[in-house]
Image 1 (tube, rainbow over the protein chains, first blue to last red):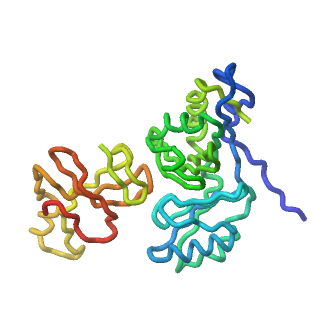
Image 2: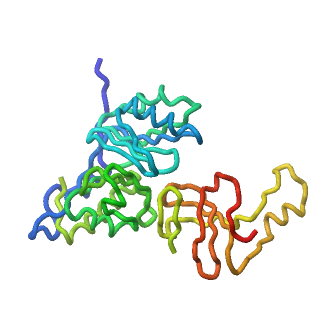
Image 3: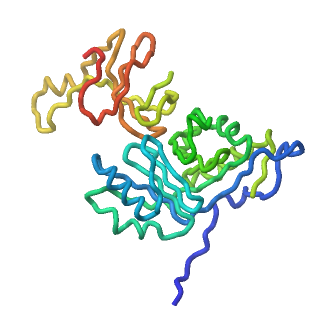
Length: 199
Length: 92
């Protein structure tokens, strides 16, 4: 018998309005969307076990993490990035990634926390994406300082956010689900001046 | 004021939480040395100059850091992960 899965509801629903908004007469310079990945996981390695965890991530997702703090990679379907020493966020469009990792991350390597229901994933893309993001977060969004695939942990008005650059002019933002609607509204307001489209 | 997190790079001080004087030596939990506990709880150097401090990058990678800050100029002289366990180079 097929498993009966509940409907997935977006926390943005009352304020998610597809279409063009703001000052778009001169063109739409950013596109906002909710990516709704099926799996969002947080993996943490015990000190000294980081390389083993990175190898587990490679085996399960097929994504090879680059060296260095905040390094990451995105395939479009799956994404992974470091957000703290020995800690990684792994995202998959499909549900069930936690089960795939559960047997591979032994207690000797580290821990796995399934945040699929605890985070909301937003995407901002377009020529003015860096400009809008720089109004929110006090970090350098220029490509040399924030390379493709890399991740950053920061916050906006005490709302913790993890950001991954998933394209040259595209960022994925992971925020607490309970703060997501408020953050989304702020993101829409900040995008009004450049003209934005919600997809 | 910018603090350079060893993981995240330079970030605004608003992302960090001060966690106190980095010179304190916590007695063993079973210790009954009242002078040692008194010193741990109350004694502070309060230097006018370089000072060992513990900060947490609470709005970022959440790492605990040993920071040497000049209390007169607010210059951050060094940062490192607190996990290493050794003291930074400020006055102690």
